[in-house]
Length: 298
Image (cartoon, rainbow, N blue to C red; front, side, top):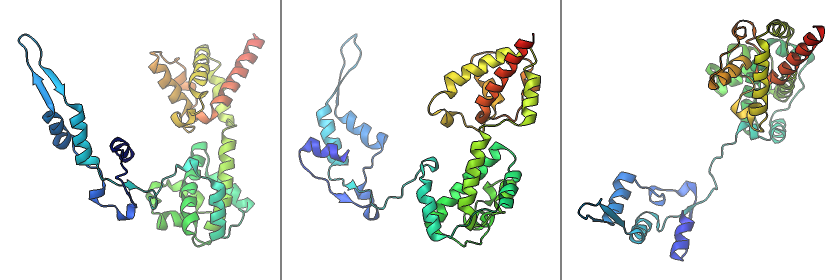
């Protein structure tokens, strides 16, 4: 806006101010009802003809001139130096973050027994995602401030970051098995567990899916699964709209409701609640294979 004023006036009337030196006088401030509307109305002419509607004639050049001189002229450009920036955690460069942590806190690999214990404590895909998210928040702070290598990660979350009330107890329990000197190894483990979770269905989920797709009504549900996969999950940014930890059944039923379709009668009773969207493709493949095998037996 400041550049536009300079272009309009043909002069460089602006100057630069850092955020540290910024005052109220430097900022463009106005209220629509108190400042702008009276100015516009004062530059508006009304004409009324018998049997006709009121005609409004606006003096736009004069209105523009007054807005520029009153609110914009002489305002500075605010430099970016010193402005804190927020970075989406998914856009963070963890290669750099891990190097910064290594420089501040000497890292040690996780022992095999600790890896097994953490993996056992985090039983589901969603729990792994929650734990990884919590660790990544910790990494961001540790990369800047460092910390005591021997301090338990759970204590760091509760005492330093004050995240105890925001973190589920079982997540804290799993993270309590590691110290700050294990953060890099823990991040590596949880990232691997998350990727592995995208590829597998549990045995009991397969068993329940077999029971569900033994019903005749399951075929129509499989068609809806394929349509949702093609139309919704096939998009590049699908994971931003449909979170991987969301339940497959709940999400697909909501999709069918938007189409004014009734869910097959066996879905609520037999389709596993625990299956997440992260397992969508594997679930669909399993169901298709089961259907093909069933057809061959007939």
